[in-house]
Image 1 (cartoon, rainbow, N blue to C red):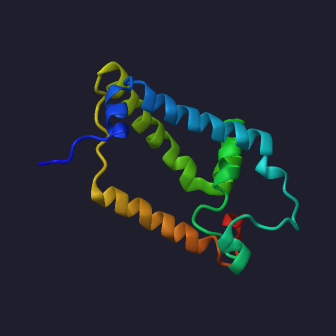
Image 2 (cartoon, rainbow, N blue to C red):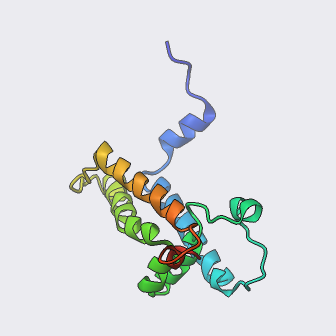
Length: 148
């Protein structure tokens, strides 16, 4: 026999269907606002890295350049965004579609065509991300193009 629902569970059951999508959208808007105000592209060459991996090892982590790519993307400069993190820019349309499909089902009760992502596709994407993470840290051309 399951335990009786707690206060938090009862609160979630009574909340409107649009609350979770609105909360996610609010978080994304807050992140976009912060990135717009902070402008991560303004850092100087001698600035201390904020990434712990880069600070301790000097290597770019798998996510390095993602914030700058996001900044360039929301400012409409897709080539510069792809220069800073190509795989992030590749993934954004899929993430937007997943969010829109979730919102349409959650709020409006309408199902969009399901995005069919197989385990093989996920494996290929993660392998490409791993290869990108390794290649961007190699110190000779043509891999220095990936260095941010």
